[in-house]
Image 1 (tube, rainbow, N blue to C red):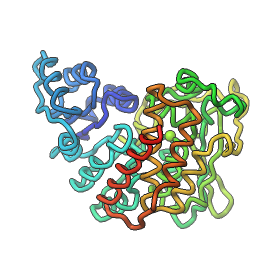
Image 2: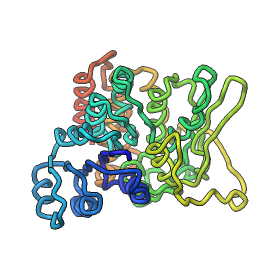
Image 3: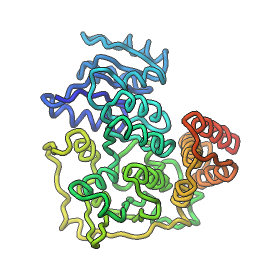
Length: 382
Ligand code: MG
């Protein structure tokens, strides 16, 4: 029996994880759940999974949740950053699924590591902001970080059974998003609805917009650099519109291993929860003859400069990746709120990065300070 804490349980990854866990009540028991805002869904999850504690965004939400709980389960209710950190380090849990969106994932990630919990990591921003600090802390505490992002799960699975010194290169695949074939001249006319219409993956709003700008892939490049200890030069991004090959690894003898499956996050979530074993999910295999061909192409970085921003941020390092990430979060929020157009997302990120004076070897407070600076700067540019 594995005891779990799930942070971000009402989001896309969180609900998919609960779908997996629901199938195996003999294998998993949930001790802690957290959600920011969706109190009604969290209340239903509490009734079903009966956790010992929950945490929500703030005191108002905590009071609202208290009123919603009519059943027999009355977990301890905490809130705010402190509450999320308590959930991440919950005493009797073995493993934490970090599925909250954005920079909010960093402090819980560190809290979980300090409490020596195994981590299933779906939040990529924690590694983008403070990859060196997070990975070093994980190493010194003997904590495994198991990737839940489908690409990184694929890479992790391909590396399994191979020696690290034999591996040379990562082929990081991307669906290419909804605008891969759209002429750049029409990008100014892209609406929020266009951008939320992802061709292959069904995900939360932030990551869907990140997929449309290819910033999601940029964040994943930085995530891969930290998770697998490679240089950005060892990563090649490939647009693969069928989203069947979730990523590939190249070895020194020229062998390439890839991991395939239908685009459904349950596969990667279940693997992180159960590795090295696999759970029976009754998922269909890809219908290869119906799909016909799998295609790969180099993404157009003129149309999608986010990829160049991310490679540059990763090469320069220091506080620059955190600044890029924070500017992106503000830009995506503004785009979702219809305050700015699609092209302005790129402009906000690049201008904020240009205005930043990079600090190398920043400690955690230095990174958080750079994050705050970037948010204020990006907001002032809207
Ligand atoms: Mg991904």
